[in-house]
Image 1: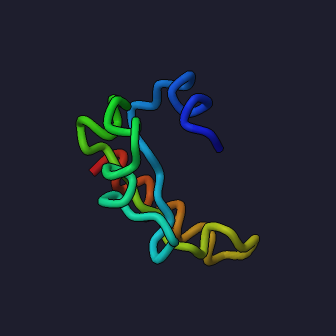
Image 2: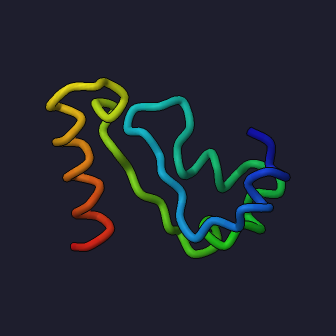
Length: 71
C-alpha cells in the first residue's frame, strides 16, 4: 500500500502483526510516515499472527487486540 493511500485514510492508529517484517521503529523512519497522526501520537496496536488463520486461535488473537483497544 502506498503512503498516499494511507495518508488519505488519516488513520488514528496502526495495526501491526507481531513478528512481521515491519516494526513501529521502522515505520517511524520511513520518509513521509511521520506526518501521519497515528505515527506522531505513537498509536500502534499489535496483534498475534494467529489472526491470519481461520481457527479458534484467531479468536484468541482478536481478544488480545480488543484488550488493547479497551484496557
